[in-house]
Length: 180
Image (cartoon, rainbow, N blue to C red; front, side, top):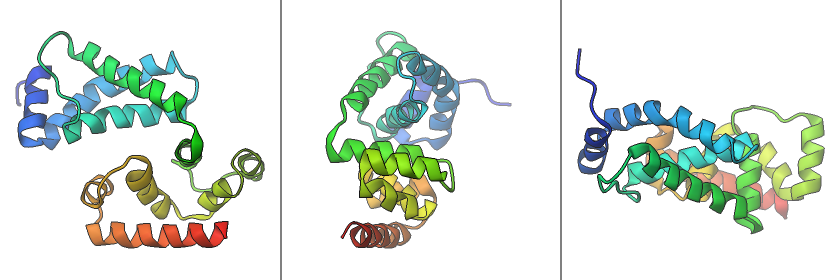
């Protein structure tokens, strides 16, 4: 059995080698804690889940660098709380798209009531998103909302980059047709 690595060792392995196991261990160690803390600040579980994902994606992509000063939990809290503020300020088309996709994530079909409410709140966009398959919505989430490259989205979704491109093209075409 391997020895438990320190937070600093995990972060160094992620930064230097893009060590997936180190990333997964860090995520298991801190994601539940960060989620609980952020839910104390925001009642919308979908927004909180997005913020936790964005926080850890920033670490994986290397955009957030730990300087080995202070507590890792405090460092994660600063990243997560700033991203929560950004998410709560998010208005305009990108913010509406993010909210609509967050509501649709983790379920196959919205109820009739939810469709009516989404249509009232977001107009045709939410309805068009509801009609997309979960696979197409996942690609939109990764590439449009999360801003991942095709290659990064492919790794995240566990599909080939060509499939990401094809699904993104199909999703855009279906949205264009639905919104025309």
